[in-house]
Image (cartoon, rainbow, N blue to C red):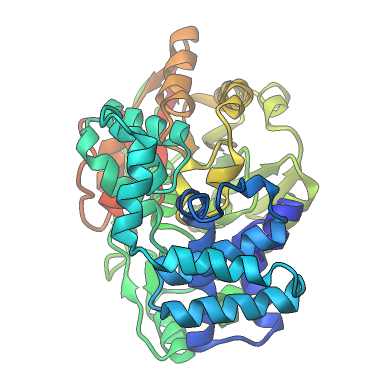
Length: 481
């Protein structure tokens, strides 16, 4: 898996489940392999700092990539898992001989024995002191000990402060990024209920799921492969973070206004067992501007069908549009149309055509570092400039596509200020035909229990260490002219 991720820019969360199925690795062995693979990727920065102190001055860049990956695997077993040091060293040396050959086995043995001579606490102090020798830059120390690139660590600190949190939370946020998230599923309304999905999960894994904390449609599983669940295979349910569910539900619940400026009734809650959704009148055409891979589109499509509305799911990449079609395949025919096209053009092509528009904008993905362990090592500050221009163009197009009185949800899976409030505030300031709604109030209205720390709005920023979700950002805007 490490070789595929490094060599072909593959995504670990797509590569590893496929490998486990191909090799028929299940149960505790699958759990061990998953922690070994994902943990090694997440903590790569920490382990590289440790390994560089154990190679007798030889830079890590001088090692063969395969050998460096093997050393990282061994280091994670020694410092990050409950594997006895002698077993971790012995097995990694044997793996080196099997995968690379006998020549580097002595190097791997010597380096990992050096790693094992100091415990984790000792290593964290040592590499932290090297990163911050004067004790004046705690962020630089945290970056290496918590295994985040320094620019991301500083950006996350800035985001905390910009959203009413304190810098003291940075430790907890970075720790949350390094934890393995539990699998959260969504029971798509009208397609499967949570009770039926819970029974499937219990049957498949032997462990009953627990209800989500925030979304009425969420279940958190303790184990098992969700791809084997009948409802997931039939697209009646899917794997979806609760933060992702909440922003879709918030768009569906946000109050519209009539074209003459009068606000429409928010509707009434329906359903039981905590599964509530809002029904509104004069609400017929919805748009998901950047729909791939389709999780939010499937949830919106299910809600749209219950309302008698339709959803246009637009995606620029044909292969991702195929994923969207698979995700929405259980929604009754005639509700969702999947379109391949550039979302930046859609506002001009279909001006004022939609009551509700979702812009799940391409972003750095810094809010999902726990779920996509390799992404922190692939991104650079330079990505922000290119993405910022794209995000502004997509939001402009979304507003153009919304009717007067319609609502646009701008969403990113990143808390970076440059991708979130700065984008929205720039667009609102430049245009005279849009107003901000209180997204925090809308999220409170759709959540099963009120998420803590939402603040006074108008924006919503979720956090892994506070809400147990990805760091999802939400802004709601209403077209006024």
